[in-house]
Amino acid sequence: MFYMKIKLYFGMENVIIDWVMFYMKIKLYFGMENAIKKSGIGRAFYHQKKALTLNNIEFTTDKNDLDYDILHINTIYPDSISMIKQARENNKKIIYHAHSTEEDF
Image (tube, one colour):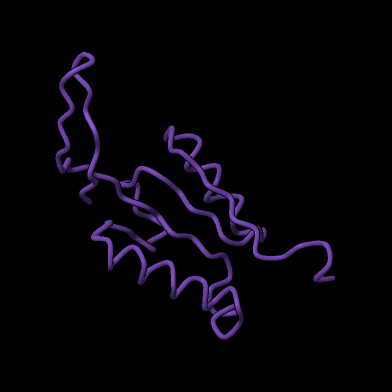
């Protein structure tokens, strides 16, 4: 759950600025977590969890948890495929995040 200040327009004359509550739960998924723990991707995992916590956005890292709205895939390893398939079967939104570029290889 998080709050966002938004503008609501009612006709040309009335503008209301108010805080609105949104509910969203993110599933952060980093394939082969133990292998990447000390890498830059591992640090990204730490920072993403910290940013979500600081902004009061609920998240899970439990790969069996189906109670989420958006799957955030940070690594495309073979074990990520089953997570993506599970999300698609349950009509979840998916964000793919690339941490490497062609120049890294």
